[in-house]
Length: 117
Length: 110
Image 1: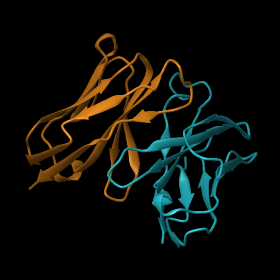
Image 2: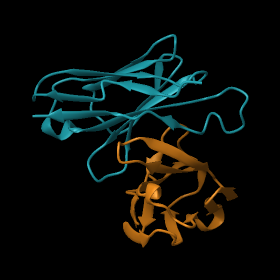
Image 3: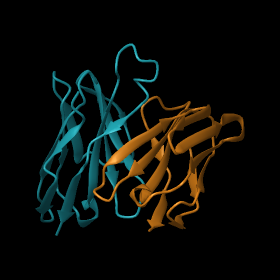
């Protein structure tokens, strides 16, 4: 089975621009969540998508938005980029039906490293 | 929200040594996972362990939910064990959000 894949791996933007990050979930996983990891910190929860709807959100402003598609892949969009948005953005999927811990075990992708200048 | 504290923040070992990493959390949890983040940023799930003890090769973990802590044991450490180890929890009040600690940076020298 394929794991979680994210693209692009690295990108550089300037303040005020917009960015779209993409994530393909692990086969069979129906839930996708996004995390932001600043340098030297643990990942911080941004939001989670299930059945194409956001069903949980962390302490991030509305300029952070997302989508989930019928094939369970997902996008993270960030508008009006700020310098503090520079971070590693991690996507995680979960939710293998029938597995006792499947809905609780998150599988992470390798991340997209965003630099805002 | 729930607080997660990991100790020590940094740990330097010689190859072959054993180590114990600790994770304390401030509320009851229904999900606890240990991750290893490699130098390229990938988070690798080591254990799903909301309670009890599990072992996988040289690694083992124990969570004592009633006392709100978890321990990760690494035996006979290797240079490839280097990286950041994170503990992450979900509390009973949230069914979707993992809260991470700040991690333990482990360096294993040859």
